[in-house]
Image 1 (cartoon, protein in one colour):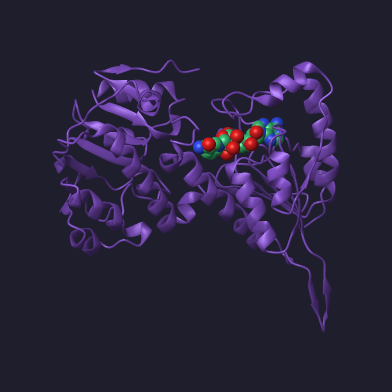
Image 2 (cartoon, protein in one colour):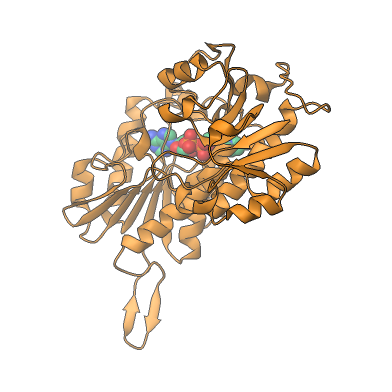
Length: 373
Ligand code: NAD
């Protein structure tokens, strides 16, 4: 199969959907790989490295002539014209964005949105949400540490003692747990909150304290159990008690990192203007949910807002700030997904009995296949 790897065009996107390591494996397996010139430059992959790995370089994605194209982000308008009907397209195609899917379907491509893969053990090696959220959680802490004008660890020096930073993490999914682990490595004192009771043990095993908000009704317990491992919107009664508990921790915090998400919905607002105003001057908030509307009322995408002496960073694409490793992880996810849709003859084979393939297939023959919320 002829596989094309374009240069990503979204502003700020530094990742690429393959690496010389994955290209080498694809070529060894009998595929032809064509890479758009400079596709890897932002991930520290020079064009020579693609050629050494066995790929052919082309000047534009329009010249791929590929049966399958692997991308990081969903195509922008200007990229759609390069997609020929019948081509298979793999990427983070934004399965909740109905309008984007309609446009994609109109090109006639067979689209696979990797974010839609089930969160099962078998899907772990191709789980792009996990591989990228891990990186985002790590980088969010470094962004916070960079903005914070004090130390994260306790420092005892001849010139005096500095206290350890108090870090509060809201949302302890993949990104939040990695944020806890990273802040811990930097020596911070950490507290974390999540709606799902299952994460209490994980938070504690990383050396952080769980902000416990006990459930008082069956409705609260049921909502907290979630669906398929994901959070569901919590009842107002619980959210009020959580808000009070979180408000108190935030008032005392030096750094707050927010990662609370509910798939396909606007992010819950957990840090209000009043909470920001209760914080000490010099405190820092990193809102990882800013692209989904933000967990903090005052955050703005790709800006550092200063309010009452508090810096609020809304970084939309944190994995793109660690492009070399983000691309390496993502490229391995792509390679593993390919194993599910390419047969021994190196042809595209869509097996709808496979729950992963079925969940990810979003466009085919000009139609959007998944009913979006
Ligand atoms: P996510 O990015 O969708 O959400 C981040 C976190 O925010 C979640 O933990 C969620 O519970 C939490 N949250 C939502 N509303 C909140 C609120 N009001 N207050 C506080 N926290 C709130 O989550 P994710 O990282 O994609 O993980 C989702 C689930 O999938 C988890 O259960 C995770 O363990 C599971 N998972 C499973 C696998 C696997 O088995 N292959 C892989 C990765 C993740």
